[in-house]
Image (cartoon, rainbow, N blue to C red; front, side, top):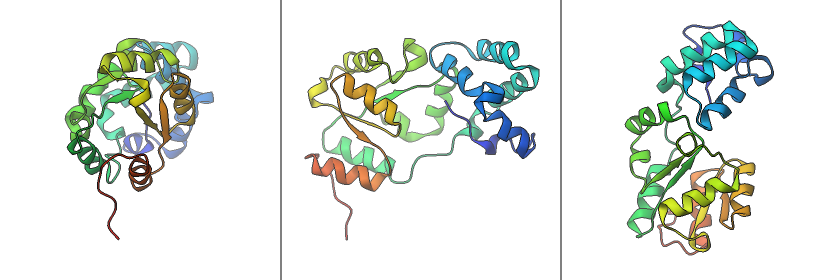
Length: 194
């Protein structure tokens, strides 16, 4: 769970938003880590209030009240890529550090999340990436083997965590690069036409 500045623009100055998104000032990302691990929004807001003050607790409450505005949308091309992979007869699952009270909103808003064969959400299992335990939990939950699985993530620490669990990994940069890498690995999906 990470915030984008656009959701705060109607209510807060650019400087206040910048300060809120600076973890050293507001504690926002530390609170997100706590909530991704299972704390409720109320607990996250209380923690920020206690450790960083009311102004940041009030902004975190506003964040939850306007959560959908923080989502920037589906990465171009990813819905089609997921469709192509599933059409090839392969499964696509989700493993995310996410806050349990907001995952439903995201799933309702974005078709790509509803396309997944299943998901493991950190706050629901009280484990977080990059801890090895959450990858093992995902493999078990999805009924898949590490040897036949490819994990894709944009964060290097999460890729390292999956590698420690014995899972092959791809560091995500963009849809076309991921598509090419999957094709090179033998996944039978259409290439980008020249």
